[in-house]
Amino acid sequence: GILSRYPLNDIEYDTLNNQVNYIRTRIEFEGEVITIVTTHPSPPSWGRTFNSSKRSRHIDWIMEKLTQESGAMVILGDFNIAPEARDTHDPAVWNEDHILTSTAERDALKRLLSLGLHDAYRLHHQDEGQFSWWDYRQAGFRRNLGLRIDLTLISESLRGRCVAAGIDREPRTW
Image 1 (cartoon, one colour):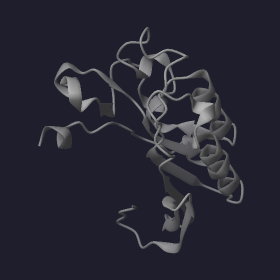
Image 2 (tube, rainbow, N blue to C red):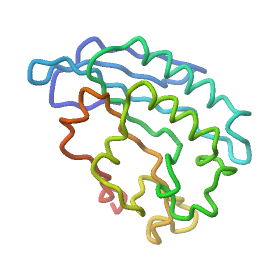
Image 3 (cartoon, helix red, strand yellow):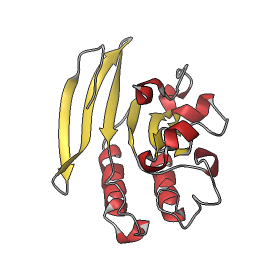
């Protein structure tokens, strides 16, 4: 979903595989129309590779939808892809053969970025060890054994105006 301090205009819900996978709206901010998209590519099936799942089709579908947009844009969601080794707690385990960090998944994310998008978090933070997901089965949050798989991507036109981006760990402690 999308929660905004500004009125939402021109809302579009679209689905693939009978799931709400794509919500697009527009807001007006300081006289400019900004497109906001939230999406959640299909979660991986544990034990399967990226190419054998519906995830590749979903990423391609999202790209097709985004190429129909123009102007300032923010795309956010649980992409289930850790962009780089530094976005994992243990790059030796979460390697190019592992789901969520496979070469195919990272290549799919690079295809999205090639649309002129930028990782808002990485514009402001270069450090390792900051995550948005932790495995609940192994006390991952308490031990900071996580991955950064929830992303905010912004268009080139917003890059210079993006003054902050971060990960709020506080709700996880409630």
